[in-house]
Length: 227
Image (tube, rainbow, N blue to C red):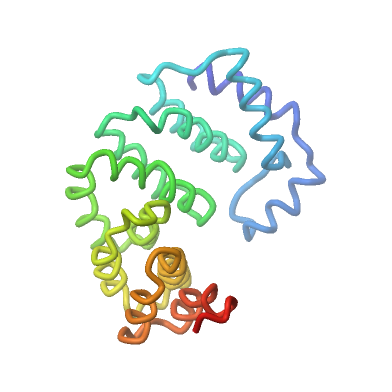
């Protein structure tokens, strides 16, 4: 284990709160162990740790992230995502391989969505060639979390969203019974209503979306009385 991770692990374990860990584990359907460190405290601990020890070198980032991902308590995966965020502006193209590992390992909405809407989206925007070689494979994957990432990676693009691409990816997932796919479709469309509400409404009307997707897509517009 990388010394950076060993020292961080010791720090986090010293702040464990078993009384808080139980409810946190239950919220995640008992899929992961927890130390009982809440989000704000997690961020503060990592910030203080990095202030004291410094950030790792970029060359050590991949093994550190993987070491954190291997630890059983979920707080270490959240720490990994926060650490990745500190480097995401300068990652090399090949780092998409590390991101894919994080998506497909210990997968659940909490980590996958953070990756999709953050580092992955930024990486694809910065490196169109990486996007163009990666998306076709992820879009065809039987692994739902890669497909969910394809649906969500443009969440922060706003006016730069490739709506035609989004619609293509959505149509590839029509008929899915996966809750997390149908929820992601609605979320992506709902976000794009901020840019082109008429386009989203037209697409929803013309496309046999899952009812969950359609409901989520139009939620904001209905709440504001715009449809």
